Image 1: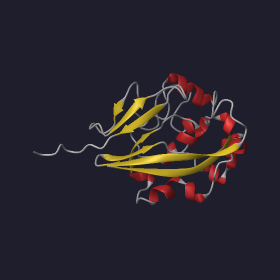
Image 2 (image 1 turned 180 degrees about the vertical axis):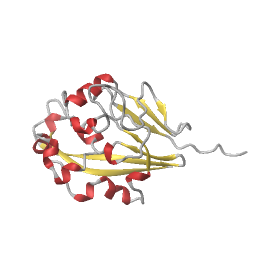
Image 3 (image 1 turned 60 degrees about the vertical axis):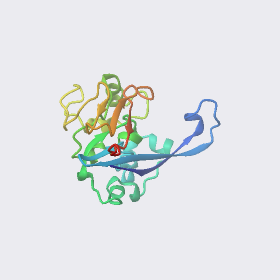
Length: 199
C-alpha cells in the first residue's frame, strides 16, 4: 500500500477568513487530493477543484475572484495522476472529506469510483445542493444525482456512510464520520498492516 499526495493548485484567501482575529493579509492555501494504492484497488481521497475552472472561470461564479485559484493545466486531475502511472479510470474507490468546492469538485471526472460519499447526511446534501452555508458549487453535487429534489437515486454506485467504514476490510484505510467543518465531514485514517515477526 502506498499513499500519494497531489496538488489541485492553491487558493488565495484572507487569513481572517480562516482564523478568528487574524489580519486580512492574503495567504495561499494548498488544495490537495490523495491516492492510496492497495491490492484491492486504488482509493482517491478528495478530488480538489473542478477542472472546469481551468478554461471556464465562470463555473465558480463569484468564488473565482474571491479565492483566485491556480488554474493551469498541470493541476488537472488526469495530469496529476499520470505522474504515478494512473488515469481517472484506474480509481476504484472515491471518498470526499466534504463537498466544499476545493474538496469534491472533480468527483464526476473519476467515473469508476464505486464507493463514495460525496455528501454527508441529509443536512450537508441540502446545503450543498442549494449552494447555501459555505463554499459549495451546486453543479458539483448535481452531477451525481438524477433528481436533485430527492435524496435517491444516485447516478453512480455510492455508499453513503452512517458511521465509519473499513474500505478494504483489513484496517488499512478507515473512513471516519467527522462532522464539524461541514455537517457531513469525514476523514481517513491509514495504517500499514505488516505481518507479525515470526519467532
